[in-house]
Length: 402
Image (cartoon, rainbow, N blue to C red; front, side, top):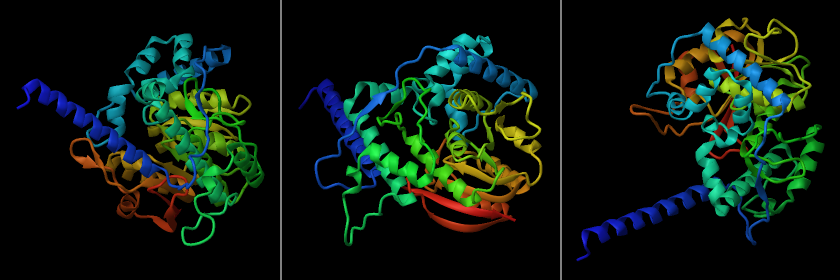
């Protein structure tokens, strides 16, 4: 018989091995392309840690003022719900950012925002503190992150027709992952008719190295969504786009590269802080308008607004509304209210790119399925439904708003 202490140690070792194997299997499932030779050669790196410059402090001052105006306009304290994933994230990871906002010091806030990808506020948005620590200590994990980005970049190239889709039944198979990253970007730029420049304002963000900057997973999914928006709206001048739950604002950034700059984001006020800073710093020549700033009435602008301000939007004012990787994580009655507002404010389409896994969320609920919520609310007619090219397990659906 082993002594009790030895049995506990053995159990801990077995649990650790089991967890490692599960993690490896999880990572393997996320890579959608196969390869038959040695693994493709890639290079990843962290963006250097940044010290705030005057433009960073100016941007921090603007988002600070907008956040205080938002909380003053809607001062009710948030009620954390077990049925909403983002309430849980806010409760566990947003405390440091809230303290900085309450202290009202733009210079110190800018230090945080310059390197937000290593802090709690970007959990579930770009990288976050846990992922940063994990990538900092594991070369194997850094390589896998780069490999995943390459996999999705290849999928984007297949989606737009730069690469031919591989066929396991006949012909080309297991070759697309060996495409050179810089060559892929050149071909994507030629096909899309835009210059692709990956933003370089996020210190400490891990990405796949390229001549156009470090490429993150979110860059690929955002560029794909922007391309789909341009295709659906058929390049109409002055197209008005609305996004609910916009992450860091990358889709708005890439839409601007396609010439779409009449764009409004509705999101949680604290996430507005990150979005406002990101968009101001990545697009200094564009018109970015935050809550409470002049310029909301009209004209071409990228607007960053709190989620509750959607109720103030004019009827039939948007050509297309996007929700990507967001609605399944929100409490059902809130999503239903969003859908009613989309139906009221949209004269064109609702584009949903979301999963349908129905995984548990909190103590008593699970992730919702967007198509089911739409059926409950009514007033939408589905135009198409197919798997998302760049994210395995996600479904892209386009609805005509009736």
